[in-house]
Amino acid sequence: MTDSISKTPGRPPPKITPSYLENAALHYLERYSSSRANLRRVLLRKVDRSLAHWGGERADAIPLVEAVIAKLAGLGYLDDAAYAGIKVRGLRRKGASARLIAATLAAKGVETETAAAALAGQEPDSELQAAFTLARRRRLGPYRPADKRAEFRAKDLAALGRAGFSWETARAVVEAEESPSV
Image (cartoon, helix red, strand yellow):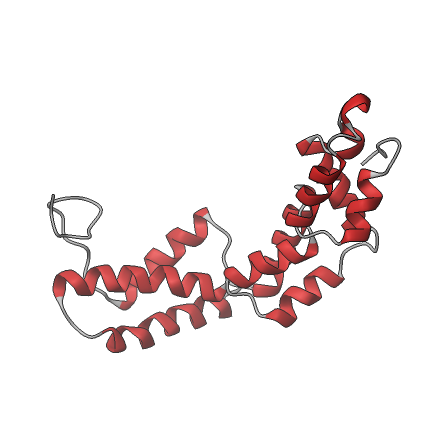
């Protein structure tokens, strides 16, 4: 096994230049939506890989990374508020709770205020709708066969609690007699 941390054996990582970082960032943004902090982490991993092979100081590359991020944000390719809105809508469709969404956005480097603003833009009953969506996907509560509901009530409540839903929301879902049209 080689000691190189390059993905392709025998091929060294490219040297860090402003054009390389910009091209790498644009290529990443073509494939994925990203926050500023997440793109910074991606570019710094590339910097670390290159510096491990070619040598140099990380502190010398940080201003280059920041310049690329500032340029792409100025061009409109990076917008944390839009990114947060997209993630909130997508995670809500999958049945994610507000707590899980906030944690996901924090892990991607979105500021707390931006995440809170994106969550505040949701419908008032979206938390309950998301809980029913998760229950449907996992066959909990009203989506479980009627003869098994009482037996698995505590487990269903625990599953919804682990997913980040409040006790009241989890109880409302598990005790619902029939599934609403979500």
